[in-house]
Image 1 (spheres, rainbow, N blue to C red):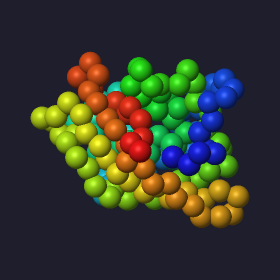
Image 2 (cartoon, rainbow, N blue to C red):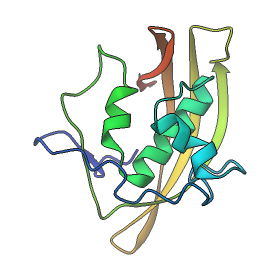
Image 3 (cartoon, helix red, strand yellow):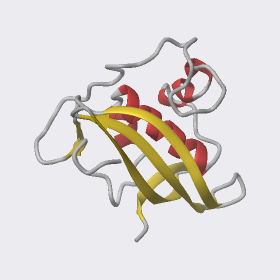
Image 4 (cartoon, rainbow, N blue to C red):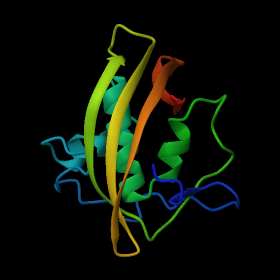
Length: 146
């Protein structure tokens, strides 16, 4: 996500669900499902079936301020000790641009995406090709590919 919104320099208590939509609201990830049946279920502990679903659920976690979920779904080798999200950032949309691997039959995969946001009255976007692996049978985010 944008470089300013996620800061790891200072400790912060997780603000899980600061903007969490109602379970019956549209999911922020862009899929045609209700939050409670889509990313809300993953935020509550259900495993993501694919790397793309994990990517979408992580985007939704940024949108609702669920730092605990972001840390829980980050590979142990690359996970920061804490995560401080910028409350001024409002995530406004997600486009999946492509993927490799990442299915129920794979142990690794990538998901290229464009995430749109609004900050200080200006629209912006972050484009990234994220790498995912399975850790303990669950998909986790590793890092951004160069």
